[in-house]
Length: 371
Image (cartoon, rainbow, N blue to C red):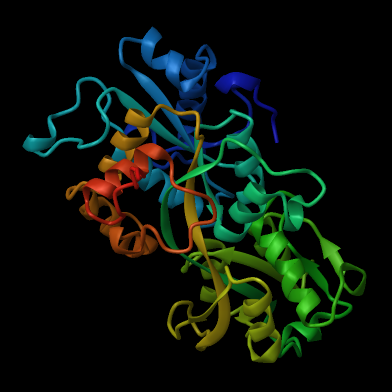
């Protein structure tokens, strides 16, 4: 992936960008718009100085994941909800109810692990991250053991559950994860949360990377390889339905393998961020009800961002008019609800988000101490 200069600047490389102003998805035919926006952003420094230098105009990035997953389109919807560029119709007249002067963009990345590093290092203002990866990043444990805890991480909200999909080419005799031994399997790319969880699942079922023919491929590439008989299976932790999987199911090329039994129960005990989950029948064409596990998808933000700015972003996310955008923008949007915004947080709330939830009565006022 193209490196971005420190301090929040952008290069006009291969990073797809969607969701500027109104969450619009850019196809390859509109790629020049992505590059044009990147060029506008190239001269920016960080979020704070952008606002000061541009007369209250600010650009705010949301790191997502691969274009074949759920983070990317959901990020576009949320970017549209929190944006309110100059000249927008007023909120009370049916226009944008986002943060005045803000243009938010959803940026494709390799996923949770990269997003945590980028936010910590100031290369992204915010990003989506699995709850398990967020916890490990903030505590210097798990996949971050030996690297030390990452600073500058806080949370805006828990968004929705992400189900672990073990996708297998139809016709293979794979009934449980242990049956993957010797097969060609993609664990997703280095830097993705899916890869982290796939390794934990394999370990729980008695397998290590040496027991498989490992392929490092993002979900859409893995789906294409499976379609071309170059891959037998792939892991993907994603909100349902995932486009990359849906396309394969529509052509009756795949099935899903359950992640259940005592091994899954042990995973939930060892790693409390895992929860029992199920992918209902009908989620994907010709794929039956499948028991699995899930983790929460959470929206992280740099702790160094001003409290007032994150307060405004949080308020825009939960504005009553945003409900319509979430419900119509993506199937997972319907699960993004303020009632579950504080569940299973991997890192503490940003002070600006905490202030908003405190005003809504969802968290207690801080103790003033005394004696």
